[in-house]
Length: 540
Image 1 (cartoon, rainbow, N blue to C red):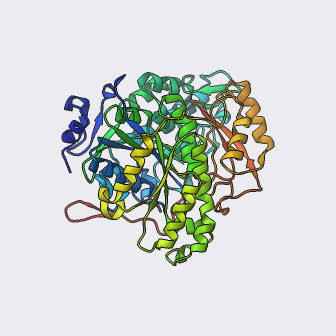
Image 2: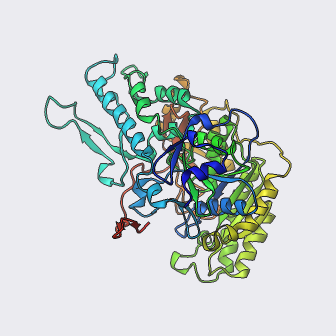
Image 3: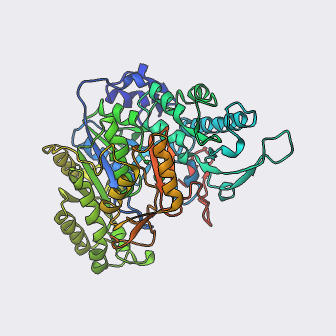
């Protein structure tokens, strides 16, 4: 690894802009974000609908950045911070794989620069101040029963999903039901990711709703006098973190909002910083294009001048076969029929991206068991659906060298004539109109069915002035639809909204379809890490 000061110099930064955290990682001052001047091109990396087979979106993002460097371009990646909980669960580390990794991966995956801890501390301080204000009657009409703000912890622990607090007598807070979410599901994390600077961070934190008074009016973080203290805890967390790829390209790893109830992208300040110091910036959106890409466009890009020049849709033959009905244990067996059937998923998502007016390059993340016939089907069908190009990628095995063809296709797509970005709904459309547009154009549904409780909440939110906020639909990531078992491109169904919640500080409404778990549980065999005799982490 290069010393982090050397990595910064490749961006044109001097060491005064850095706050080092050891030899190989550092925070970057917000003053290093250029206010004007030349700007690079943004490339958004998304994927087909996720499967148990895995698609390799982060690996592709890192490998593409390395390949851009081999072509002589100043290239950077902007990634989300890994969540500590899934590292010890099923998912494992979040720094890529094989020869396309971000380093030092042990430090990035475990604790890093303390951003997640700062978010958890700020979130739980707000919880404590909210409980205190309600118990002591400091906000008129606000009782403990009106609190909606839960606590967070960065482990996967199903026992904490629903809890009762206040047990132990009169000296404790009143008994009430509550629960814990994982840190990535905290609205504070979403706020941090979308804030454009310290002033904007303060304004967004002040709008966070922690509960409702007896008259139905919202109680905010400002009302319980928490904003200044939260700012003190988050003052360094808003600064982006600099690390590097295995081949020495700069990588900004910053914030990690949940991909279901939030927008699942790295921070606004990370993308802006990278764009001011490189020719091409590869940034990643969470889950498949029906969630991550759509949310990136409507929530992040639209309001922050971060519209991409090109989009990469990551696929694998194995994942396509999974959508074609093949069981996981049979994915390595050649099956061109299943590939043909599963391509409906890729074709639809290519069309969704194209509907925004953006060029899309389909990347086939190669596996040794892929046959020429299977690869040929993915290529021909993807390009027939409107992809600018479909390119095989072997960045896992060969690093940047294995992504040269992909990088060349992305440069060609990004440098093509800009046709102007289109969005799927007007900014001032009502919540129900926005959800209907997404259900029909992205989720392939015939219509939307709202529960009585969801309709009441939508009306209430409109009365409170939140009726035209962007929507951030919370649904399963395992299907284009709202039903996890429906693979490929489901049609002929009704998209059902069971509840609606508001993240006013983050600036969006999130309708909920199905059951969305904000506190995951550990698998039957949790991932086990250890260290060797020299203190190096094993098992990532």
